[in-house]
Image (cartoon, rainbow, N blue to C red; front, side, top):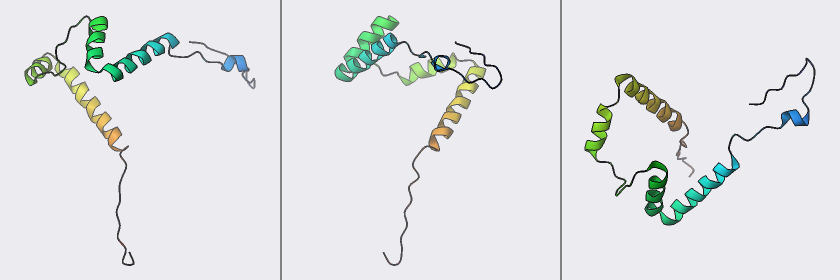
Length: 109
């Protein structure tokens, strides 16, 4: 992180206002390539990248209800409470983003 100190009344120079990118350009390039591959080749590409980056070989992407229940039982109560609170906040936020439709009728058409 770059920190610039200014004296009272001093304006920043153009150089001081330059910001470094938060994202590494090489990382962005690789991510864009992965997205393009997945769009083009679908699940086949997802399986390859899952093997490459996660070391996991998947035959299917569907998780059974039993697997979900088993995983949920492993989560501590405080973490589950935090996840539920986060889900409620996310849902509440995005519901306000939905377009509100309206319809009206008039006697004169």
